[in-house]
Length: 248
Image (cartoon, rainbow, N blue to C red; front, side, top):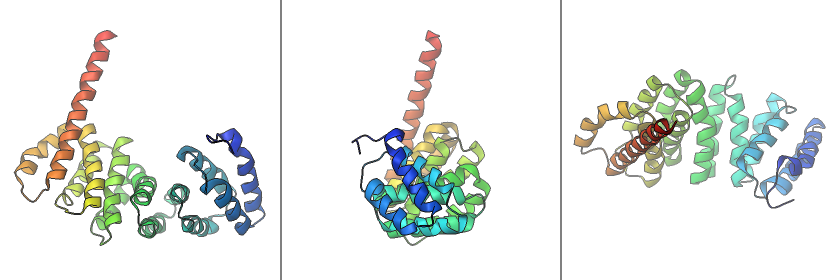
C-alpha cells in the first residue's frame, strides 16, 4: 500500500472486506482489517469512509460485536472505526451506544481513545440530539473514571464547533463549570478544550459569567486561562472578518 493511501488505493481492501462480511466470515474480515488497515497509517476520514461502507452490509445485531473486536486490536484507528459504528447507532439505540462508548473509552485508557470516541459518540449526540444527550453528559461528568469526565469536554468542543445552538451551548458551559475545580490533569485538558471552544464561538454569553468566575477561588486557574484564550481567539476572528469586509 502507498505511504499516503487514497480511496482509489483502498478500494480493493474495501471490496475484500465487503465480501467477507457478506459471506458472514467475521474472522477473515478481522484478519483483513488488522493486517491491511489498522496496522497502517490511514487518515481518519478514510477510516470513516471504510467503516460506513462496511456498515451497509453488516446487520445491526452484529455491529456492536464487530466494534468490540475492532477495539480489541487497540490501534488508534480502532477507536475511529468503533466510534463511527456507535455514532451511526445513536438515533435508534442511544442508551446502548453511549454505554458502549463509555466502555471503549475506559478500556482504551489513553487520551487519544477518549478524544476519538468522545467526539464521535457523545460529541455527535450533543450536536444532533442535545435534549437527550445533556442529561447523559451530566452523569458522565460525575463518573469516577477520569477519561469519561474528560470526554465531556471533548464532546462540548465538537458540538459547539459544529454549530450547537446558543441555548444548549450555554447549558453545556454550565455543565463544564461544575468541573472547573478539578485538579486532575487529563480532566483539565478535556474540559478546558471544551470551555475554550465555547468562549470562542459564544464570547458574549461567556463574558456574562466572567465576573463570577474570576472571583471564585474554587475555579482553577487552568479553566480561567482557557476562557481567556477562547475569548482572544474570538476577538481575532472578529477582527479578521472586519478586515475582509473592508476589502470587499
